[in-house]
Image 1 (tube, one colour):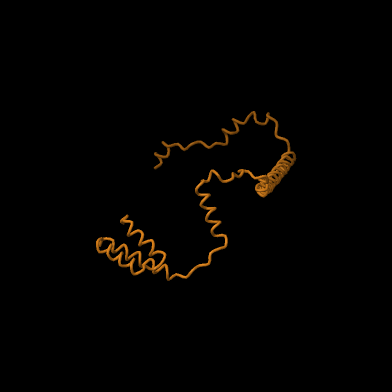
Image 2: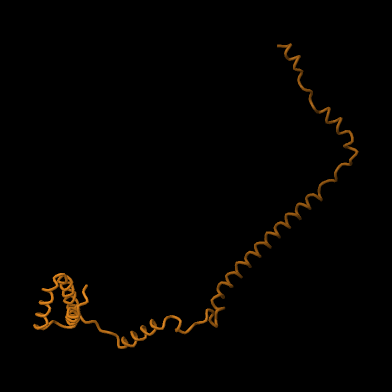
Length: 167
């Protein structure tokens, strides 16, 4: 909230250790002159007490090296990291299972198509055998009087006038 150097110095000291009586009296004098900072100081003090009550956590032996390495990585940005090839030397190994599956599917499709063609050819052969066994068709001379025969087989239409008279 405030950038007063006295307040900031006392606040940083309170993060590390408890204030001495001289520092506490200096803080009380400063807070009396700046009552608007009282709430912020109390919140900081409560946070410091809570953090002090937490147990110490063991840190990895290479913690500092890892932090420095991460900071350097962040400072130099991603452009300084070594570039990897988008296609590693054994890129084709990723595609072997896919190629094998595609080959199996294609082979099964071709076998199925061939089986269907064989079934159609067998059906055509049976049809040709059946047609070849049928007696030959009659000659066209039999059909020369077809119109006269067709006219005889048709029945005449009903006489409407005669039907009206009969009623």
